[in-house]
Amino acid sequence: MNSLWLLLLAAIVNGRTAELLGGSNTTSDGVLVGLTLIQSAVAKGAVCLDGTPPGYHLHRGYGSGANSWLVQLEGGGWCNNGRTCVFRKTTRRGSSRYMEKWLPFTGILSNKPEENPDFYNWNRVKIRYCDGASFSGEGYDELHGLFFRGQRIWSAAMEELLSKGMRYADRALLSGCSAGGLSTILHCDQFRALLPSNAKTKCLADAGMFLDIVDVGGDRALRSMFEGVVTMQGVAKNLPRSCTSRMDPTSCFFPQNLISHVQTPIFLLNSAYDLWQIMESVAPPAADPAGSWMPCRRSHAACSAQQLTVLQGFRSQMLEAVQPFSTASQNGFFINSCFVHCQSEEQETWFSGDSPVLKNKRIAESVGDWFFQRGGCKAIDCPYPCDKSCRHQN
Image (cartoon, rainbow, N blue to C red):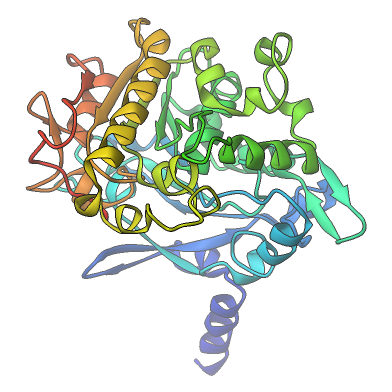
């Protein structure tokens, strides 16, 4: 008995509990899913920024979902220079050494039909994000000891999941939020190419529609950041040729220049007032040295009439960017007017009694109807502040 308990304890410490206990633990808040490290990835150079192996969390499906796969790419910003990447490798966003050994699966990852009606019994996976370039980099910084291996991590994770049964998938959905949403757009067609030709394969990008815009200071803060990511991490070689053949690599890291060329059916879940973009791209601190936007950044309720006009302009740019993509019948979208960033991973916004609603559908219902082709799934909200179903995050 003592030796068994020691074995279990060692497995927990090493994050290998999934191999011994089935990878999950049910709590009152839902299912906790254990971290699995892809040790075989190290020999292929598919490593986090600090050289540690990448990881994922897998909760097995059953019944009608036994051969269906939902793969969620974790988000968490980017690093664009030596300073930010060196810091990042001391966190879970750059090293599996600091990753949580257990993660709660909620929202689109929930295993409860009352919380996730269409995907609850699928094989559900969260791939951890530890490269800082939306799973797209390829390079090595000898000066700082940084491995930029996002594309290799993507390939190693896919190889691992295919070996776990995904190669037999009859249905599959690649999804991701924020930097993971951008990664979903970048890898959507690659994902489809890995799976059986007769599998129903689609993609869901949540809060991944990052816009190339001018900020309130007259600069392009997000373009400057993305240029650093693309240049430092060697992303250009992994960007779609359909874009790089006509535009510079930094432009091809912006979804608005990519999404119309994605061949696989894709669903855009985004706020027209994306909270992260308002704070970091529309009115970043560097563009507001006097701090006049600080109250508005903290709460949309504190925005002045002039500032709201700027935000309405951002909404117009978002809708303009979505328009070319929206014409394809295979695609879907849910563009609401809430001050939020990421809505598929949080239970309150994904599917609950007071979740955001468009055309009488909650987000989970809209995504499910689109995936299973049950009905209309293209919805754009009226401008702020008309939507009373919003669950604002600030």
